[in-house]
Image 1: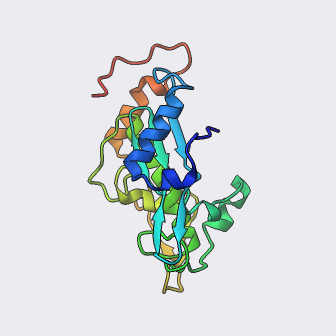
Image 2: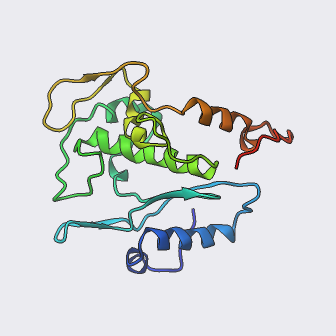
Image 3: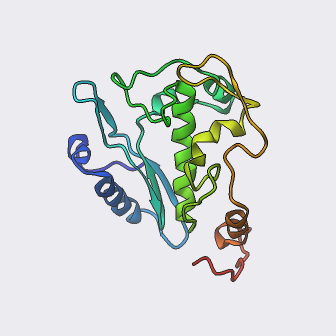
Amino acid sequence: FAKSPQKGDDLRALDGSGIYSHVYNLLKAQFPEATTKWCGLVGCTRFDTVTKKITGQLALGGGSQALCGSGSMQWWPASLKEVPKVFANTAAIDPGKTFEDSAFRRTVWANVSTGLGAIVHEMGHTFGLPHSQDRFSVMSRGFDYFSRSFTVVEAPASGKTAPVPFTDEEHTRWDPFFAARLNYSPWFQPDGNQGSTFDMS
């Protein structure tokens, strides 16, 4: 847990890059970049019901840090036990009343799927992975389908009543080449192992 000396209103006045840089400087003073990666959520995210705008919301990653806003966190599972229930929650979300970021699916489960998937996506950037052309890749908008890794059918989206079946190839995944890069990455080697000389550039 890192507390910013800046007030929430000051942080919300910044764009995503400004918040990212601010948090980066806070964490750099506490953790060594050479041996750590940082995955953070900012607690200053707010949705204005009058202007219908979200502030303090971002999803950026690279170098040592992956940082996301907490706009959909109110619906996240509080434990692993709650994961199936949350990914089956078809309650509609009104984008005029609260933050909505679900690739237009506008349900609780879809907002959680996109929110958690985005974190994995941004962490991928910290390990040197670029964007992908594979529509189901974590490193493309495939992170929207994060929930499919925990379910056998996808819950209905907004305006639909039937669950959506999907194949083994239609859920969030790592591209084979990206998976190989992570496998050889020094960050994923056992402690004490110098890792591979695999070029991650």
